[in-house]
Image 1: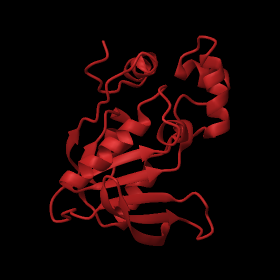
Image 2: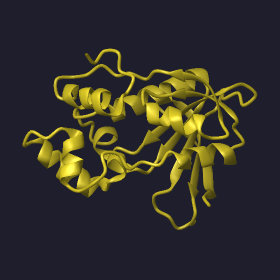
Image 3: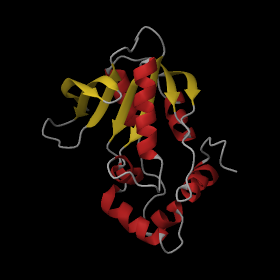
Image 4: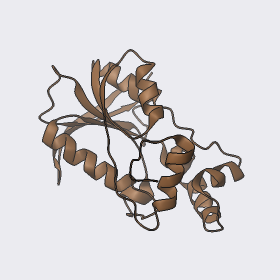
Length: 197
């Protein structure tokens, strides 16, 4: 059972947020995080984004994915409208950074993002959004607007005790490098991406 291990107010370029670390063990160096905008109204459906860690996109601004841009857009949205980003330590769809780089190497040889994972004997997507539901329960949030393009995240909420009030799209335009990655998201995972034909 995860629990709150630490929390503090953190000013960012997107606004002020309350950051809360969740893990089973207080010595966990990679806890999940709840990042809460200071103007969040908990008496109304809360805007929520489940966001999985992506060091290549968020820290190094990789053009292969839109993860860093989605995180920035979500923080801006939460600052303006109130809400929470649940930051999940599930790098590379939960295969880890080493396997993610191995998958990138296969993509250089022509594999798409799903084919590369399967070629390595890994699942196409091994993330568990049940952790995000557990965090919402600990924060006593019962009704949300979910910022996502991912039908699997929608399903996790609908199958939980949390009420899904609405889905809010969070689309980032493709660049020439990310175009194939986003197309695979739409074709294989069924992501709601209107600009991907």
